[in-house]
Image 1 (tube, helix red, strand yellow):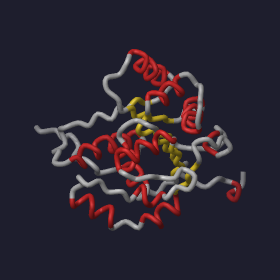
Image 2: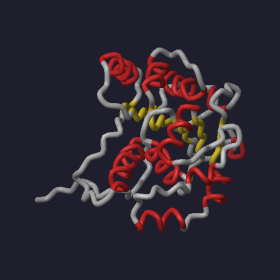
Image 3: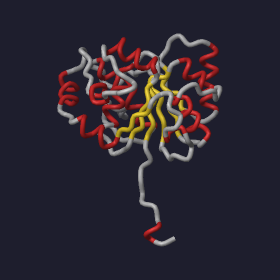
Image 4: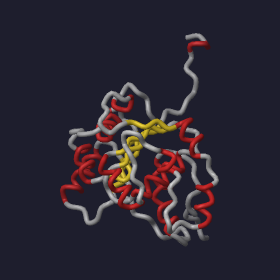
Length: 228
């Protein structure tokens, strides 16, 4: 192969799926962080995910004409001045236009529905119980579940972020099936050892752990240190 035919080094894009579990702010914070990284993102949101976003943030998003900057620039009323300042200073229109691609939840003709479309990883955040079930049974009923199946069959990283408590034996079984198939089960269970001083700290803990699974550098939290 000649130099001209050698493929250039590249970072394959990420896939993000938002479903109808509580925890919309985890997804929004993840999108805010990814929008400032040098990586393409393919996003899809289920109708239940949109309903939870409205319930928890007041944002009524239109899945047929998504205003992505409106979603990603959302600042919760409990946010700290520091986080508020970081969000307000970002040019979301420019960042999102360059690297974000939105797909309808029922469109199976999009690239992320096919294993031939190269991706680096997928995150389902937050992940509902019905989405867990669809992925675990390989019985996709929307694009999010189909894309997750693709990542498992192609042996690519799949990070699933369930946010429900308590969980039934059936849900635990579904998590176990996904883990056995190669997925990462990362429940939205924030730690308290990183100098928590706000709700932002708890959101950032979960998002930081997601980014760690994607091998993306981040400084969202104060990491555990050897105290000796």
